[in-house]
Length: 41
Image (tube, helix red, strand yellow):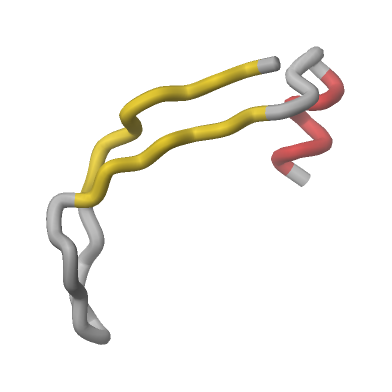
């Protein structure tokens, strides 16, 4: 649905690079990070 919404407003392809804070996680952990780059085409 989100992809259809972006396509309808002119964003055919969306790529988001995300960096996470830790290298290893266990079940139940909260994953936190930042969106590094967002590419539209």
